Image 1 (cartoon, one colour):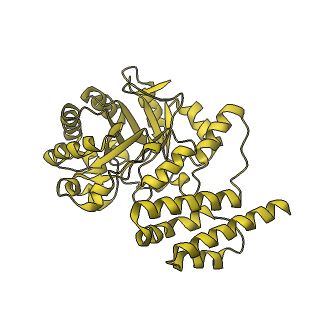
Image 2 (cartoon, helix red, strand yellow; image 1 turned 135 degrees about the vertical axis):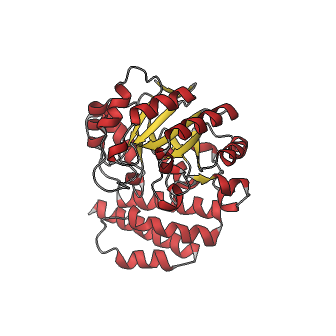
Image 3 (cartoon, helix red, strand yellow; image 1 turned 90 degrees about the horizontal axis):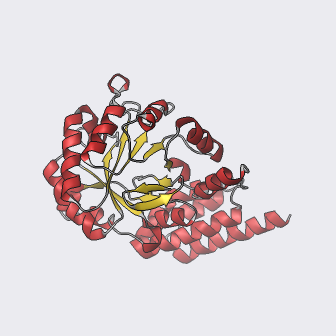
Length: 330
């Protein structure tokens, strides 16, 4: 059984990645229901937290049904990172996660996210200070390095472990790669196989099918896998992977009826959490993903993404459910 600090998180935990504008409480709760063992919040700016920005403060919300949950923070200033830990502690998550992996320029140019991979001593000292400041178990998500010539992930893992973190997730790309090309898990395996590593090592990057999850589990020896983009529109992937691990058989893909049912629940939770107007607007990014591959769906999608009436959207989703039932009966 894998543990993060003293908390058991499964024999081979599947983790939901922190994704901006995606990993909010409704989506996390759905993924937890459908097999995710640990979920992480969207990454939260520590500068926003300490300035009481409502957008940052709101991201601290946690549903009981999504636990265990990690709140992920990012920043390049030590004092701000330390001050933000107090906000995180008040939200009472199971873990505090530090983002040392975000590749976007507006984050890295401030020495935050993957930007800190250019200053590993600072990365270690900042992590150590945060571990000493908080009573929460601290975890980290990072990348292989800044670029291909500066991959020192084994050294980074050992230094972060010495600083006191309780688990490490490694995305198998460098910052320069962004999200392009294939992720290279051979470096993640090198970390996992190092005799000095005692904490769980989770792999992230490109796992989008049960077959690939099993292959990566066997080939790279990681303690668990973090799923990101593959869960968008397909939160069933967690249960699909677990079923494949257990039986060697693939579950059939979620039916149209099931997709519409979960989408409807997602919409309801989004409206409850964000209010009707904002909940409806922010759900629009999910419809194409939930109903990907359904033939002759363009007109239905147009109605879903243009209506501001909750009852109309609900009715549309019920119609999709009925359509799915009829197709199954045919």
